[in-house]
Image (cartoon, rainbow, N blue to C red; front, side, top):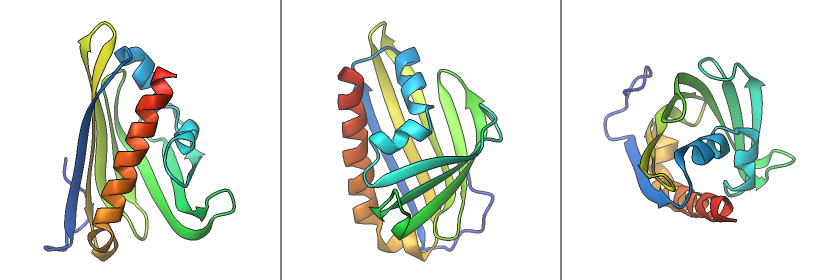
Length: 152
């Protein structure tokens, strides 16, 4: 999926992570699609719902920063759900000031108790380009926390 926003040539990044999770696809979907609870496992992030439509049209605001509860020293990531196919795929468009582009998560059952989980982001602009290593590390660590939370 390509972003509806203009690309800036060299200022494009793609992040993609695939993990095998020790949980059935329905459990993983329920956990990942609980937008507000994402703040429990996303590093230094608070997630608010701007508009909850339980699928396409849901608007999400995620603040990542030093003190996420207060919205201090960080950035807002504004997203809207553009595709909703439970329990397998969700796509979003990022339309905020600092993060623009598209993203998705995709779940594939491996067997009755394990799920292959792919998280992908295509972002454009100078900010994601400059912070790509930190952004990649933060998402990777967050997804590991998510996997541990599912096992727990």
